[in-house]
Structures are given as structure tokens and as C-alpha cells.
Length: 125
Image (cartoon, rainbow, N blue to C red; front, side, top):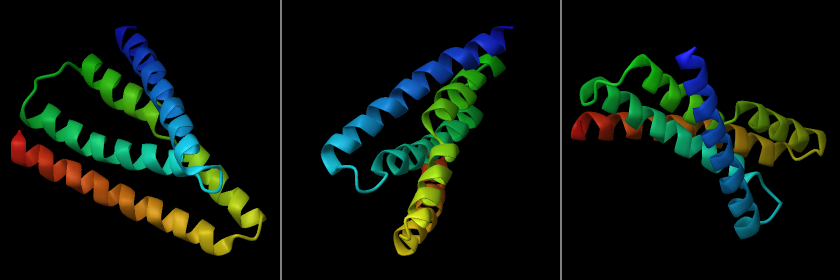
């Protein structure tokens, strides 16, 4: 039961963070491109790489704390479903080039951010 509550609490924090980043990016960049989803997925990919290494190499966090941080906060913060919907909408509008750039850019930047986080985590922890 503790794990369920930890994941739920972390998910609320992560989803709120995703909402705030999305609003900020919409205000700063406008509605023409899903910058908010792109930002949270790249930030989340970096953070999960960093966090996994920090938890494995430096901190002896309980499984409940790991669930709170990784599944809850980062799972609530990042969003594959919104990414998929945005790519699909671009394709339906005939914006195939933009959809391709967004899809491949998200995956490549997300992987780059993940490995950057892993590298930094291994270096400092």
C-alpha cells in the first residue's frame, strides 16, 4: 500500500510539473509546435538517466522512494500519449515534414538526454 501511495503522490507532482512546463512553453513559444511535450520528455529522459545512476551508485533509496521518484514523479512528468497524439494530428493536417522532425527529434534528443544523465550520474556519483 505504501508503494501505491508513493507512486500516486509522485504522479501528482510530476503531472503538475508537466502542466506548468506546458503552459510556460505555450506562452513563450506559441501554439504552432508542441514545445511543452518535447521539453518535458527531454528533461524527463535526462532526469531518469541521472536519477537511476544516483540511486544505484550513491543513495540507498528504498523501493518505495524509487517508485515515488521514477514511476511517480518522472512517469507523471513525461508523456508518450500526448507525443503520439501530437504527431498524429500533424500527420492528419498534412504536416508530414514537421511530424517527422518532431518524432525523430523527440526520440533522438530523448535518448541523448538519457545517456547524458547516465554519464553525469556515473561521473559524479
